[in-house]
Length: 393
Image 1 (tube, rainbow, N blue to C red):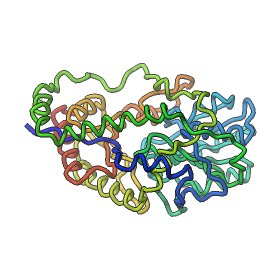
Image 2 (image 1 turned 90 degrees about the horizontal axis):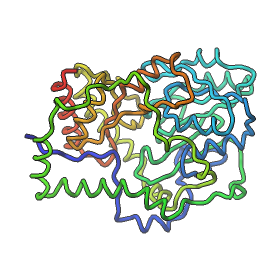
Image 3 (image 1 turned 30 degrees about the vertical axis):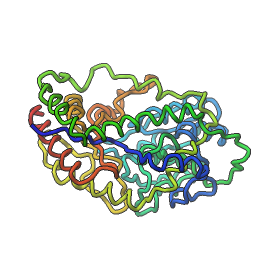
Image 4 (image 1 turned 90 degrees about the vertical axis):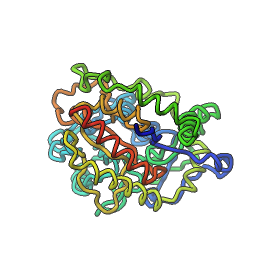
């Protein structure tokens, strides 16, 4: 019986936390944060609300957004009064630019492009097409911090770009809006989150740290073995794709209480000591370690079959028909795998987007973050392979 090895999605270095608080609120000078104006926000959705204000969207103005979405990036536009129109994304998470063009109308004021999991979309042609028609383009780089393509660093081409630092880095909060035009940030009255709110956001890291400490404890080994011994594959959930589409979590819907909230000092301090080169290198190494072991696994389809130069992968993403079973099995083995964006925004009809529904219903996310070592990646690949085989997918 193989011991459980704890493999979290993120881990924090508590030794520097107090020092981070006093390092100031300015963001680091990374290439992706090189626009005319960089505004730090508490969350990406708060930045999108500000963008609606800054561009003076009016009720009924149309925003074209990809059908494969989290929902939390859609809701600020909806809450502001804009009309969100979804466009097609194919089964490989590639945006259908021809579908964007078909859906544009004289009321279209924004085309929203998402770079999924670190892999780039081709922005240049659609950006030029939109500029000829007076349409603003937004690049969503929430999942693609540090990634670049032949067009340059992701997020540096469009009129505005959104980044969410806590997707890639171990911070309790933090996002950024990058604009090509200048804005006087001092007039925005931004405020950091309360100490209580920051403390609450740090609790998942405390849990991860405690589990990691238990993982290396001799006392915990018998408990781990007992947990695995009691684990029964036959009692796992029998379905992974529900006929009724699940609503996205309530906290994904926009909360107006967060308007004008900035990044916390804790997060901005942590960002200043992050080394992008190390993050990119380790994530690529961990991704390739899983890819080499799982690319030919029966019943699994890896979403991205290549890792181009410049891509900083967010996670190892694969499509599995019995996702819920596999996820539960991996979680029981200490691997923080989860269903990616399985919830549906309740205000949309999804019948015209079968590819997006397929992604929402089958994509499973495995951690490859920079805190995981070679042995942990080997453990993840072995357990994933064994679980898929035992579940006869």
